Image (cartoon, rainbow, N blue to C red; front, top):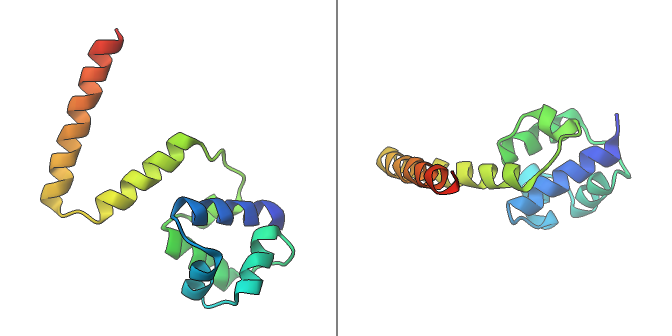
Length: 111
């Protein structure tokens, strides 16, 4: 296992969510020092901690462990999902209609 790459992935998810190392360490029940060592790949992380990160970020363990291209589009989709998860069903439906309309307009404009 490439613990350096896992640490990089965890750091990307943490930063994308606007969390500090201190905040993530507190949520995962580990020390800030251990958190720092995980992100730099200087220590192995346990399965329970990996599971905690997966739950905190709302992503699969595969996404934390395996090297995936972390693109701006992926980050935008994740951010959109985080926003939608905070909305009521009615708000989700309205936002979905807005996105659908904007996509239709963009397709027409770009042709």
